Length: 378
Length: 257
Image 1: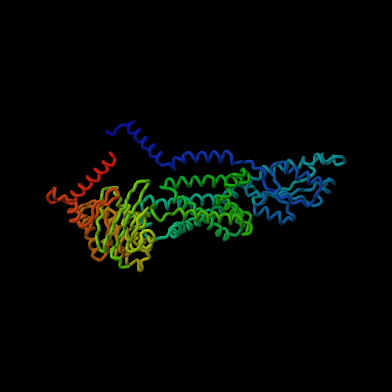
Image 2: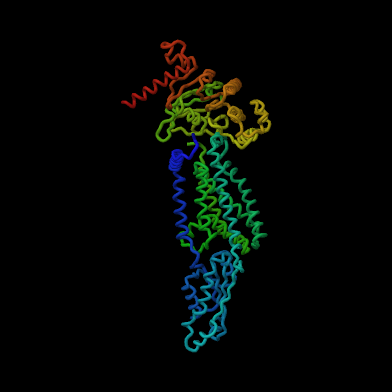
């Protein structure tokens, strides 16, 4: 009788599960691979206190004082001066297209005003779309401004050390003045949700054909690989656009995310981004032997996509190798584009490079997918 | 395109992981014949059928199927061959009609709606046209699969154990259908384990361990076996049991040597 709990039956169940686990090599590898990947990413790649942030220095005055100031800024380790624009417009452009996180402006007559005790003001323009990326650096600069000239203020200027700091610091938190994290996260979610759903939809749609045996029938019929691939992908592009509409509506009405830029431009970019993810899903489906493996591969791709793309943690805070991986992922570029368009009002010129990178990714992965798709059962 | 033979292949060989599943296989099937393909499980029947319709590429060997080269013209072969897989391979979450309309569109059949309608009538599927394929019983699934395989008016029909798991009445109806199709000029290659089905074929061949053991009409195969001398009125089944005994003996000798 199968009445009570039987350890013998339990043992049989457990043994069977272990045998099946061992047979499915990929699943087994994933069981080890995913934790290792998480350890590496969380342990080494993520840094909540980003330093060495790209900075543009727009200096309109040159003297021993400004040299001390620049040296002090760089020694703080928060700022790496990577560009020295000649005009305010140029500095603004660098900030908008994301080349730099900060633009520091030293006004004309800075040295004269300083020596007169007129407390000249340094302007710090911060790209504050991601408040967590800029917070520490801004605080660091505030401390610096108070003490950086201590050594230079010798002789008759010593008196300037008393009282308020000899220079003032004006901080502009651009694109997200109130430092609301939703403004950064909600547009980012668009990229994350599309990555997750688009990849998994296609990966499963193809693997299902193999698993249910319908692939054999499909291969017997005169249908071309490109027709299969595009036919599988197009319906999900429509799904992707519906998801986007829902997320953007929620972003606008529920989270008051500004929609500064051109939404048609965003729609155009979206097409390439969605197609890139679907191509990844299609590639996975040619590798996976069953739907479970397809899901696992998706997770394997999804983890770096949320951790290394600048969605959760500041992109520039990561070490070089992690940024390099991040640059390969389409979501990294999409996040820059979507935040740029919605928050900064960027046009095509500013997003061009990221758009090109995404397109290159799409082409490369499509080639792999088409190459992997077999027209026979060999 | 009036090659006298529907299938003409020589020396077909295919290995999987070092095991020769099909080994130097020759086959000639005349147009309009119903050709029975027999042999124990794992004898290479399914692999041979897949080689013929271009689903697998042979390691060596050559030949033609409907006058097209099996190595280089598999796209052309696909258009003129109807293949019914051993396992049901249409979409279970589509209805009968939706499945047929999908297949009709893939083959680029003109006036697809009408062709689908005619096919539904022909195979008595019209009453169930809106039923999901997944909810059909074995016999009806097999009818649907046959409908999908003949809709584009193929010249050659490859049937891989089409009647496995189907009740006797449905089996008989299915074979009547096959004979009707052959009468219209279609060539049929059908693999089966049932001796009564083998006896309804114009010609048969018997395959074991990737090698051909016998071929010809049913009478010829019985005659060739030499079993008539040992036993009165031997049946086809007797012949195959006899043939298999020889093969297993040979294998045992090889292993011992």
